Length: 251
Image (tube, rainbow, N blue to C red; front, top):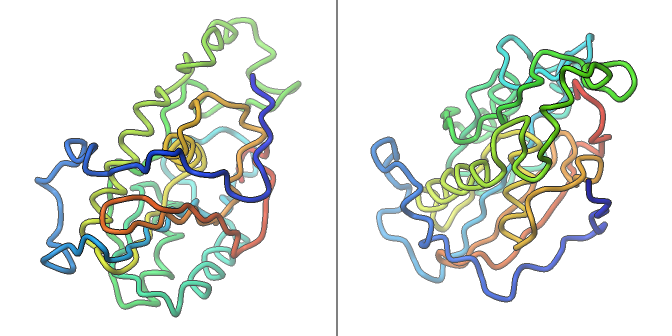
């Protein structure tokens, strides 16, 4: 695994700006809602805030992945409220979330603050993982059992879950659709740690496999993508609810 510790500030974007038009084919136009503005201004600034959900009630410390029934903890609800307050004076036009309960619950106070409904996009869902439902903490979980070791044979794809490139493509599809719909305004997309971090690395031109202990994607953190027209010009990371340990399962 890599030991690439992320910088405390954002890494610079690749020399060549990411043109989201190149990935337009990834967007399923059949379920795209009507744009907020009918005409997209090539110079208008649009911000897509990609938000990780808040803390989850997970007393058994399992890797819950896409399992149903995992709601926000009391702390998680407080974190969602903190993000909503931090975005209260922003020009939020759309709020879209992963279909999983914790993402929907994180999105709800933000949507309510702006008089919007939370919409759902399957492209924002958590990454698939063969360890779903198991404890995977080092020393006391599934990784101690030899029958699981074969799943770890390829850390680059990875062999234990959804391919990183597939995650990046579907996340970018969700971002592109929201960017077009909210052109000249701001959008909030609520997703999960690995999809958000994979998207960021993809946009920054970095390799997608990485050491999960070094992800810069705290609970209820915002990775804000700033566009001029359809060109990505900046990425801003912030933690309106404070930082958290990326290695803690159930967080």
